[in-house]
Length: 258
Ligand code: 48F
Image (cartoon, rainbow, N blue to C red):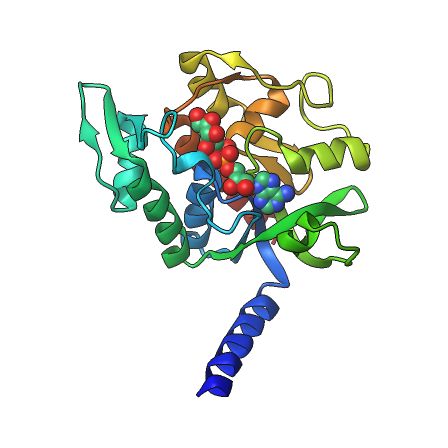
């Protein structure tokens, strides 16, 4: 019995890993924008792997506002949640509240059921660039990195890499600071997130979502940090729309490349 259980886990995990050593899209970070993008891209028929450094995917969706586990979404954001089967409660003609635990678990389940594979507790620590095109991510076990162990990573090749790492835009930072590439921003670098302005932040999160360099894209707060957008706190419609927008851009780019 014991051997059978262990063998089943080892076999099925390594089958999953082997199947995802080369993917169409590597999404870094399983926050709301990354998960919406993952579902849309998987539904478009692309092979999608999501790498999430924490044990629990979901990013900043679990805790609501100051641990009061409800969040707010606009009508168009609620429509995207309804596609995942997530329930919202209308509070007026514009806004809805959502139970943040239902939202987090629903987004994760929706992305996974659409076919995206989620690797949790796996951190992307670097990118791969060949001939001016980002073409992969360098991954390691997050507990290994957490303990400071000197263990080499492995590489996942990808036709597109999406930075969905939220406020720090970790992957774009690697591209700019380590690889020294100039991205599609007003300075060619990272402008840095501005303070709270919900309305503007929600709007610019979607506007700021784009391809930043061949093979490299940003969504959600990562996109906002790159382009110097305002933060917006526990309102999430912009995150879902950003995920949807980037999925459309990536799907179009990859079809052209094929
Ligand atoms: O921050 P996060 O939720 O991303 P998002 O889609 O959404 C932002 C909102 O949650 C919230 C907000 C709304 O008003 O402001 O913050 O932009 O999720 C980012 C995920 O990326 C993971 C991190 O653990 C989190 O779950 N992550 C960050 N760096 C890495 C990573 C990395 N290097 N490798 C893998 N995962």
